[in-house]
Length: 358
Image (cartoon, rainbow, N blue to C red; front, side, top):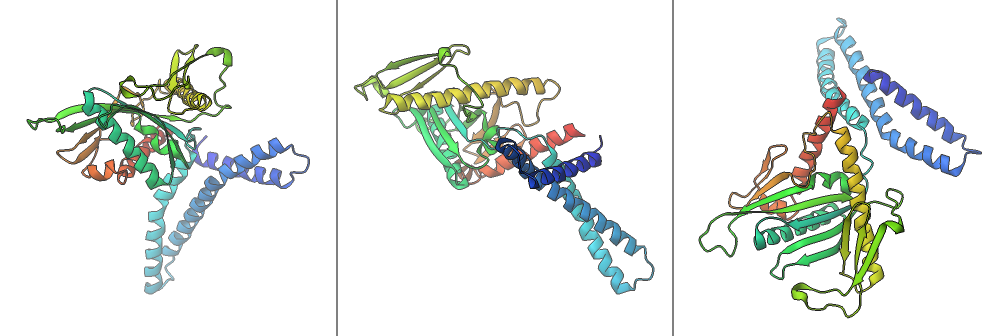
């Protein structure tokens, strides 16, 4: 089926849905909700198709007018200007329609769970991990998203071994899903007296937050241990067994929570993280099957893949997957310029998937 046939089918289906919803009498509420959702999803695509086809018709009419020798010089000049303007709009409209036709990632509109861990580099890696965590927190503020810290295992020296948060808002996972991987930093540590540049790393994982309907966890598959929470250095921070460790026996995944004084709250947080990790494992399994024939240009999202370098002496941030370098490291770390990199990654992913459709 060529592209025009596909567009015809979409428009026809949209009108069929419109007619079905107009005579909703007797339709089960669940069926009505399902059709309404599909209708709402198709609406912007059909609107763009209508705009594209109207623009093509307009261009054809203007082309015919240019071929009409009866027009005077002034009229012809006006038609030529309009012809150029309409013709220049067409390629972008065609690309917008193609992008709207790309298969949707079902997780794009979900909230996300962000996990940042210190990698190689000792305390300097832990300090960098803390800075990355703050970068995403500031980025969430810029985007108007809610950032809720779930767990922070700090080193006592300003760094973090691990930090986990939920980020809630519109299109969170769609914009953050390419952040997963190894982030490398190059700079002179504050403790380095000789001025030598060190290289350290931190690992970022962005997981779509899963609901019960996405991942159902059987109680029999869990081993839940409770224990007394303790802070840095081993000192007791709680006098009750409120900390929770959940082991998912089929997968071997282990999640531990001790930030809250309530065992119930720690268990709820741990289950939220576990559900997201299980959902992510299933998505990765499906993605690896789909990627058997093609590896995305943006990268696999593998946690072990080095994706970005933050070079402080040169003031640059380089994303290795798309070869993009921006010389505004302070603004990136402040969350203000991170969107430049995120948008470039999204566009590269769209280009790769559009190439697959051809």
